[in-house]
Image 1: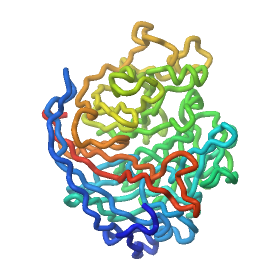
Image 2: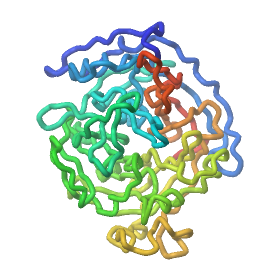
Image 3: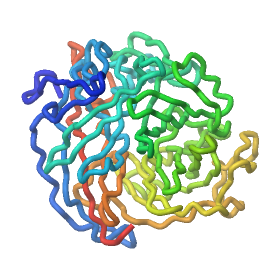
Image 4: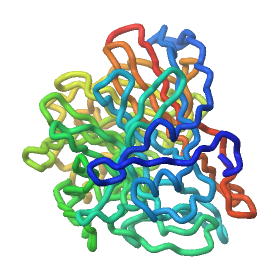
Length: 456
C-alpha cells in the first residue's frame, strides 16, 4: 500500500539466539478481511464437486524496509512504499494448528518497456529472501517469525539474478539504471522443513535445490551440471541433470514436496526450451525430479503432461501460461500437483511409479530429435507419462483467489492455499508514482482454506 495509507505500523524486533529473527504479531496491521462465503463447486464432470472455501485470512500491511532491516540491519535503504508480500510462493505445515512456514520469492520486481524491449526491474535491490512463519487466526494472517537467507559468512542473499547472458539483466525501479548481477541471488519458491530443523527450498534461477540451516544459512545449492556459477558465498554443487540448463527464463523449479521416506520431489514450473523457446512455449510436457538428500543426487525423473490450457483456464488460449507451482506429498509415492495459470488452477493426484522413470534416457539428451517437449503425444511415442486424476478445479470454487502458488495439506479433506500478491506490484511505468513510491495493486496475501468433498 501507499506509505501514507492508514493503519501502517512500524516494525519491532526482538533478539533470538543473538540474531534478530522474529517479527512478532504486533507487526501485522489489524485490517480485518471478511471471510469469503462458503459456496458450492459448480464444476462439471469430476473436479471435486462440492468443494468449498471455509476460511479466508489476510496478511496486514508490514513495511518491507522495516521487515527486512529488523532481520538484517541496513539491507534496505528505501522500500519505495512496498509492503511485505510474496510470501505466497509456498506454504508448509509448521506443526501447530493454523501455523505454516512460507517463503518469499526474489522480492518486488516488474517489467517496463524501453525502446520496445522489456527490462526487469528490482525496486528494492537490497531485499533478502526470507522464510516466514505465520499463524492463521480468524480472518488474519500474523507473522510469528522470519529467517533471512544468508551466505556461509552470514552476508545477505539477495533476489537479484545470478549470471549475465543466462538470466534477465536487472534494472532500477524505473528501468533507467542497470544493477549488478549477484551470484548469491536466489528466486526462492517451494519450501519444506527437514527433520533436522533446517529447510529445503527450490529456486527458479538455476534452477536449483537449496539446503538451508535452521538459522537461514545456505549449506549447499544443487544446480545443473555445466552451469558454471562462480563467486557464490556458499557451496555450489553441480549435481542435477544438465538438460535443466534449458529451463525457460523465470520458469525454473517452483514446486517442492517431501516424501515420507525423506526424498524430495522438485517440479519444473514450465516445459524446457528444447530445442528452443518456441518449442517450450508450445509444449504441454514438463518434468518432475526425485532427489535423495542421503545420496545428494537425483534418483528419478518423470514426464508430467499438462491438460490443454483451455481446460485449466477456459479464458486462456496461450499454452505458455501453463505452470506447476506446487506439489504436495499425500502418500508414500503419491503427489498432489497444482496446474495453473494466473487466474485458474486445478489439483491433480499422480503416483510416482518406478516404471515411469526417464532419468538418463534419451529425453535427458539435449541433442535428441525430437525432444520430449516437441512430442505432440509423448505416451504414443513410448514415453511413460505420469497418469493423473483430477481432485478439484479451484477455478470453479467461489472465493478462491487468483495466482495460487502454495498448497498445504491441513488434513485429509482440507487444503490451505496461499496466493502470490507480487508485493502489490504491477508491470509498466505506472507501477510507481512521480516520487518513486509504489502505486499498490490492491492485491493482498491471503491464506484460503478449502474443504474437499472426498479425502485426498
